[in-house]
Image (cartoon, one colour):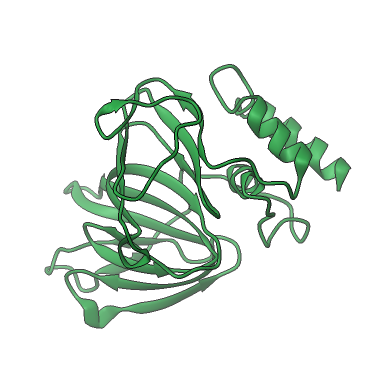
Length: 229
């Protein structure tokens, strides 16, 4: 296990995630600690990051009802209970006051890992019921020759119920073990289906390991297969 951690740290360093502008000492400590979670709150801030319209500060708790906004050059890594998040630049994410309205991704990109309780995630094109899993979301992205706005959703591992907003009858139970079924989700009723298969984009296994370590866990694929993404 220690040798695997060294290899992972080397990969993170090569990717720039342990540099001055990337994931700093708290993540190195999390990886070294293994099963010991870090305290809740904001653990890494880069560039412009605000909570409820006010500049964010290191260690600040993210509470129900809060909205986290990262500027174009911003990035935030934070822990809420059993969940950990890597919110990329140019993103707005709001947290509700119940598990039935746990998180709304208004725009941008976020990678998340979740504990065992049931939660609902909402974005413009779908509602996701999720439990004990990890996912990556890109909201309001443009794809295709016509630049049609769609949402990207990758269930990195676990089980989720995906309910398209425009066609709830197309709901699907998605089960994956290692990025097996990424989706583009649309609300364009001219499309033959609101959900189509997508490639794996813009998130890595190393980042998932990093987030799970922050909350004292390892992802299910770790140790079973080489991290490829």
